[in-house]
Length: 158
View 1 (cartoon, rainbow, N blue to C red):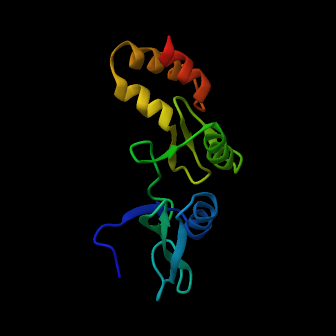
View 2: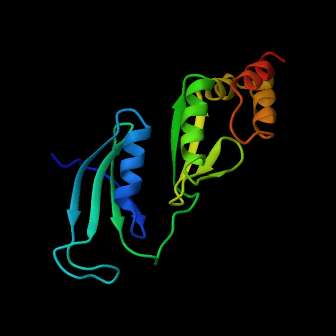
């Protein structure tokens, strides 16, 4: 059954490679269909991969090989909640280590330009606590690229 709402992500020509990487990296993720173009189109030819249907952590997505006209931006990102430093490291290292880029405050970008927030639950819980606890955790986060769970927990305690 086709989901009522699907996230459509524009790729130049690597939607299938990206989808297979996401499926191999994140739990509850899979490539569910690959569709080839039935005819030539502005950025491809008949038989080229046109769309790829996949899930990322259970979220339905479609990758469209639309050509170089549009690029990913930080205006859209996947936020992946992690339970501990080991899980945070695993996802961060998978993205950055596959020709991705580190950014600040738990953000990184994969080699296709898609932004990811690798967010430990410890940080989310600290922010939800409010008050001085949230201020200290926020100040600690602002100095980080990949989030350091132990440093966030220490900041929460003051």
